[in-house]
Figure: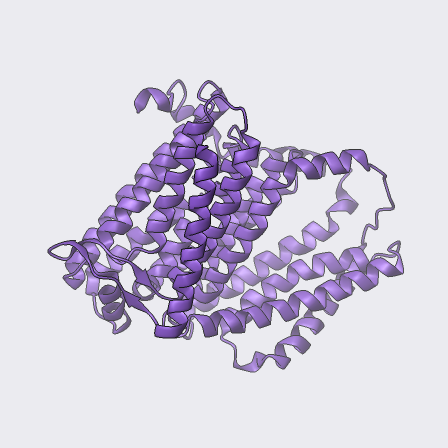
Length: 489
């Protein structure tokens, strides 16, 4: 009975989100009345950012709750699981709709605490205890950072109303307190989004039911990115903080992306993929491309929810249809042609969408994306590749480029007046942009060429180290050795 009631409630939330989006289209952005005293309490802020997140979270929540009702059917503690799942979803919804700093902080903390109960749904599993302990430490540090940021913002602007804070920040007000607050906001986002070196808990949180993995990787993990997007106007007051986001996010994306390629287990590979995707989203925020970061959240959430919920079926399908086929390994010439063709496609499609009017940050991000397209093209341009594969990969490359520019235009239009545009980069920003493009380009070349070196002893050793994430979790594990989070709570 309880699972069906939860599913109905999730569906109601989705309908309310659709109605809220309709009201936003008809009447524009706005805040509800405050339920509280002295400017502190609960308030709903409805704008393009919160409406998109409301729709996204409620839709994924409905899918996960519906899936969980069948997945855990007959489980002894199904009722408790459903309760914690619903409370986690409710907290995330309160977070994305927050119009007041106090509500934002309370929802942020509540989301983490409820998620902790889900991570320990099987409390006797040592791996679950270890992952939850790491998550607990990272989350409490993130909570402290967000509380510090909220206090500083309230002092800087004399209000806890988020709309007023953003309006004042866009006018350039806030001073040193606001800049310091931006630093704490960045710290909270990095900790929440499992960025290096605090990423280990996310890649080890596999001892939970699949619906939890889907909710975590498609929903809760996005809270860090949402925080930066919500306070984009404040973040622009601190260019140095944005530079840190570029460096940490870019490194995490490259590091986790390489580790992901070496993982033999489907769910573990998906977890490393999430770390890499969150790093890339943080990179986008650091470049000031907040509309694209919001678009990234939507695309990644939908993709990752489907991937986790379908992971078991995919494994069974592959096992039942295991027919080794020809493998086209690109040589240096094919890789070079692939990169040249990818850049030509990018330039042609880009000029069709007004490429010459894009900001340097947008052009750089597109170049990084096209490196991934080049890697795909290299498979189709390999000497042994059949013509059908070549045609298909070229078609995918064109579709990817068109989609990038088309969705970019849509995201900027959707958030116009809500999210600020990226300013012209200064010397530091230019240096980071060039570094990011070169770094992602080199990794793409190495990735495309790696099959040629796969059987070299050095490559085999590197693969072992990569599969273990270069042992970045070893220090954290040692610090937490012998400590079990359930005893601490």
